[in-house]
Each structure stands twice: as C-alpha cells, then as structure tokens.
Length: 256
Image (tube, rainbow, N blue to C red; front, side, top):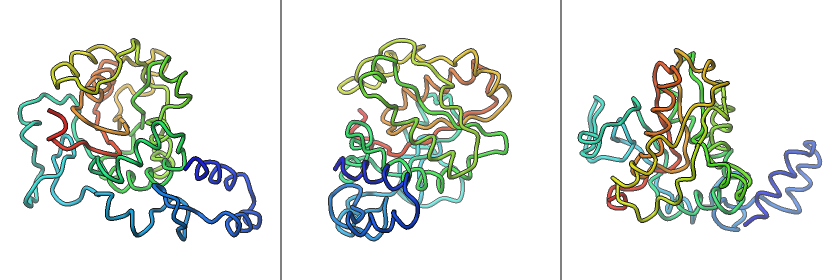
C-alpha cells in the first residue's frame, strides 16, 4: 500500500511525458486496495460502496447524518445538549469500513496520497462555510507525537483543502502545549477534560486571525473535544468566527 504514496510523489516530480510512461509501467491503484484504477487518487468499484459519504440531512454543528429532510439547519440530540464553541461543523465520510481504512492509512501508514483526493471531497462540503476572509488551519499534534509520526495528517488535509479552495492556509496557527495521550477508551466527559486548555494559538500567528473567520480541519471527529479546544484557542486569539470540518465523522454509537 505504501507503493501508492511513493508512486504519487514520483509522478509529481516528472514531466507529462515521463509521467504517462510511468503510469503504463505502474498503473494507478485504488486508495484502499491494490486494484488498478483509471486515475490516481480514486477508489475501485468494489471499494466505493464500502465508503459511506455523508449526504442529505446532517447536524449543522457536528456533521453527523440525520434521518429525514429539512430546509433549515438542524442539530442532533448531542449538539442540543453539548456546548459547541464553533459555529458550523461538517464531515465528508461516516467513519467505518473503507473510510476507516482511508483515515488509518493517512494517519499511520504514510499514505500521503490520500490527502489530495480527500481535499477535493472536503472542498465540496466546505465551500458554503468559507468567507472572503477565511483562514484554514489544522488541528495540531503535540511535538512528541509529530516527531514520532513525522507528519501531521490534519495538516496534510488542511493544505489540500486550501489548495482546492484558494483560502489562506496557516499550518502552524495552533500548538498542542501538552501531551494528551490517546483518547480511545475515554468517556465523552473524560475526553473534554483531557483536552481542556491543551491547545493554544501561537503568539506570532494570532494577528493573522484577529477579526477573521477560521475553518479548522481534522481527520476524524469523535466527541468533538479536540475541535472544541482548538476553537476556544482561536477565539482567545481574536478570531471573529470558527467553523470545523473533518474528513470522517464517527457514528454516535461509537462515541459514548
């Protein structure tokens, strides 16, 4: 699977003629398996049904899909009871199956090639949220985790989204000032308590967002604790408004 990422990096460095020749020898492969596909950054017909796109009615705060139809913004039961510091929230995929493989490949498997197509998918969902003064920023990793992983998957997604939309990117806007460990297995209350005050705005970047709209980018939204801490940091730094977008949203049954 890592061959896809290496192949994409090589293709970016080649001219169109050599790029075409390399595709003959090494045809593009599905993002979640090794099946040949017609274009780089796509899924094969067998994998597409296993990737659940969020469409139709969804919560206006956290992006989780909802039953029914409505012409106005609606909130899920959780967002009616949990204070969300951000304004609007969107997600592209429902976490699980093929979406889970995409996220885990990007997060732990060096699958940087997932970021570009994910950026295109996120751009379609994010455009209604953007303003002329919007700034796009990723949720940060603690320096120790960044050192071990070598990259921040949310930063890759934010860069791809900024490229697709033309919005200003501030990749180092936020800092995670203490190691918060793994959130897996924690209750919702423990997740929020663990992230409280753990994310702050970088002082040298605060003037970039003063009085402006910030769109925060993360790979997965579960309870929303990380995005809440990041949103509060943006408001403390002077942001006028904050919205959030995640590549994938974990279903309610898995967040309790």
